[in-house]
Image (cartoon, rainbow, N blue to C red):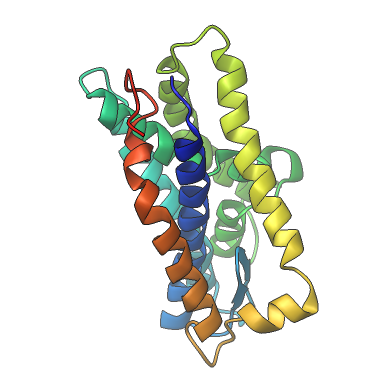
Length: 229
């Protein structure tokens, strides 16, 4: 495993871009159904209108993006893959910020759990059924992907390496959410039901893409023998 400064920059930018895809999936599902949710940069706030199936679709939309990317990463991390494919797969799996999904094991709250709660209304078949279903769904995708990522780390302290890839993106994402949680930032980056994406948020997304493009090749170099400069 070779972690260069270019790879670190590329990886963190990829984390932000994939988080944006997650939020945009929520937003698109909302705008195509009940059209009442509000989102900010790296943050989504769902409303309730009594349409349980539509609200479930909106809740599941974000995690579906993560699960698809994790599945792609899982496939790229197979034994037959090239070092570039494995590097790309590893980056995709960890850039989905699995720890953000796994925090549901502690706090009993996530998009997956919310989605199942909506589907099970007016009453769950047993207490905690939505929690069990939501956590089971996320573990179905996360555990195999993380396992393949782990076994592909060929260093003496691979547990520490994997922990770093889990924790650091989670902290960066959390800090950015808090920094942009004040009233002024929310007003600048809000996407209310009357609009799909405000101009400032579009510009921010474009900026992330522009910053990522010069570093994109580094995403496929973490498992190569020698990364190019």
